[in-house]
Image (cartoon, rainbow, N blue to C red; front, side, top):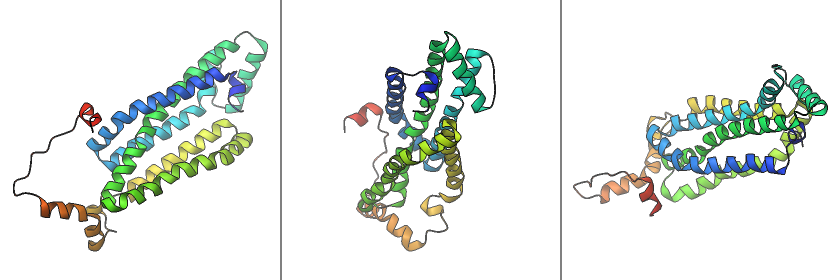
Amino acid sequence: NFISPEFGWNDADYGLITGVFSIVYAVSMLFAGKFVDYIGTKKGYLWAIGIWSAGACLHAFCGIATCGIVSGHWTLRFNVARETIESIRMTSDMAVMITTVSVWLFLAARCVLSFGEAGNFPCSIKAIAEYFPKKDRGFATGIFNSGSQIGALLAPFSIPVIAKFYGWEAAFLSIGLLGFLWMGLWVFIYKEPRKNPHVNAAELAYIEQDANKEENLAPAQDEPKTKIGLLQAFSF
């Protein structure tokens, strides 16, 4: 209701943007987990949140970039960019160019967003595995996964209000800035259980109960550890 009329998008344009986002998100998921395994949960989530937040903020500047590319008039004021785009669409034959340029800019921003979003669930599940024994991981996963559903429920009530009073750009910027705030909290809050001063000995023993059982049942000579490749993973 706010973005499509400004750029002259039709259902096909919106479908293209949504479809490309879904495809890039799905493909990125194949590699995000491997990346998180390589650099660890804390750094992996920082990268995921940082890229996602940057992608969210990039959406807000698609209007400014469209205005600059089409008209040659560059401005950092969102309202001026909106007014310029509207005047061009109403008074010239450049409406198609505005639509095309804006679609490609939003596609780029959505791709950045999808790269970051792909790391969310691998990092979350890995954090669950680090802090919960196997018997509690289903319950813990259900709790963190409910957050995305709650967010989806709250978005229709909050995002349109922000867009109506402050512009659709503010809706993207506010979400992106919240992501950067969460990055700051994650840096100071999250530590591995053994390195976390707030985890006492009893809690650590509860967290590592599966590893302790495996050590007691393990043979005298450990089997060599091998990495599972992508194609091999599909066989399970």
